[in-house]
Amino acid sequence: MNKFVIVASLLLISSPFSIAAQCGSASERELALLEESRRMNAENASVQDEAARDPSARALLAEPEKYTGGGAALHRKYERCLLAVAYVLTGKKKLAVARGSIGLYHDRKEARGNRFYLGMDIAAPRGSYGGKDPFEKSALRILEAHLGDVIAVAHSCTSLFSEESVAGMAVRFLWEGPGGADSLVVWMDERDLRKYEKSELLLKELIGKSGITDAKGKLVRLIP
Image 1 (cartoon, helix red, strand yellow):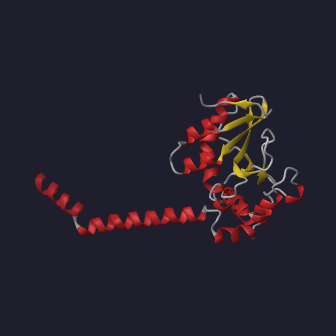
Image 2: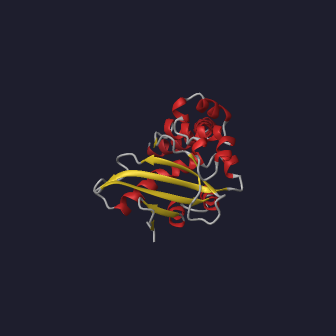
Image 3: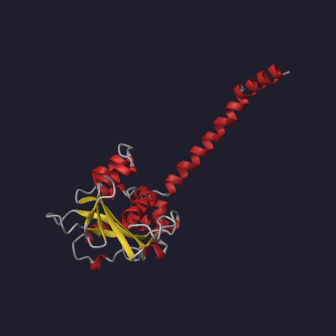
């Protein structure tokens, strides 16, 4: 009796109907993943159209007229893509992006003032850090929990990052530490971002290679 059950089970697993069902499920999952990826892509025309109609997305962008370090022309050229980044980060990823913070910034410490970083400020969600934890522990937890999502959305604006003057991304995370308000900025080089997207770098390796500054602008190292 046991042998019959085993044989019958094997026949069922290997039958064409079973294989077709498994393939069908896999295809449905793949299609769902592809659709999700499409909905997260800032270059997607329909996503850009939706973002352009959403006033809350526009409120998250810096105003080009107020740029002091250059970058206004790039901002205007890629405004639809920036709107899509804002729209997806807040609507799909549910991240709290600060009003007027998505824009193109340059690192004042760099000698070349014509190199820009796509930047934004994000309030770290509660639960992604411990209110009583030291800066280094909270900072690393926040980056490991949310930086990957930010990169996936913002770096999908491939036309912007193909510009020679765009050097990478600069993301500020803000949270409440044991001593009050705390923050960090992670400066990521475009070459490292490309390696990360190609799985040539792990997220932790990307964090380790990137410049990170605290609220006082002091360089900190979270990963030895």
